[in-house]
Length: 307
Image 1: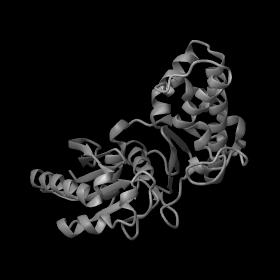
Image 2: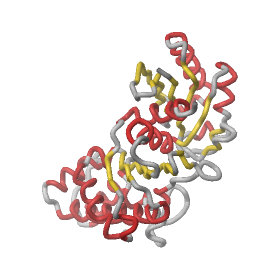
Image 3: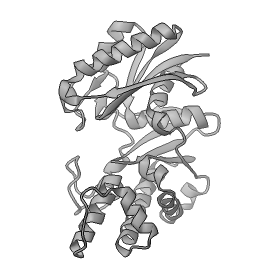
């Protein structure tokens, strides 16, 4: 059975795994990214781990890397992701393939998760898939005719930066009113605390979106309003992407979706209200199913999918 190594690079941690073509993960290892130490520090640790894995599993076909965008997948370069500031312009693919001499590919982390969900669960069922993750931020990946669509500069699928409120808050990307400022886990927490403070209620700075949903389930009117509005905004943002792409399957993932079934249900029920019939008739909505290893598995899948 074919095997490949998947590497999931994040601003906090890096996860590496050996993945088989049936989705079975043979072994994994994690370590802190330590962005302040620079990319060479992390690459040395990655190289050491990969070398160990390749000695243990000598039939490995290649190495896939998922990393935060923006990046240039054709040149194998991390461009300027905000949570990897010391990595800007870093040629990660060259650094790794010069050591091992096997195919190495990099792609956006949301694309990796999208392709992992598609390849290991849905590749025999659907040809056109949209994947959206809702967690700290909002990102997406697109499968068209059974292939990952990355766009001109690996920038396709940036669902979180669809503008929903043109006069809204400034997003981290510099635009105003992006979906990410209205429906991400970070946004939910901020909006809730701002509304609590505006009504003169005490606010604990340690509260997070889990506390918000706890209040929602206790019928707190502020929490109810925040979740109601956010689910509407997310459904609106998703509808724009769906009407542009006309997928057969929408996969929703990320901590806010997976951890909060009520939010997933609200969004799923609202979404058809914003779609044309031809876009909603055949659309199926599913939760992501590969959990924390989706990025590792998806990065490996980009190697495993090649003949």
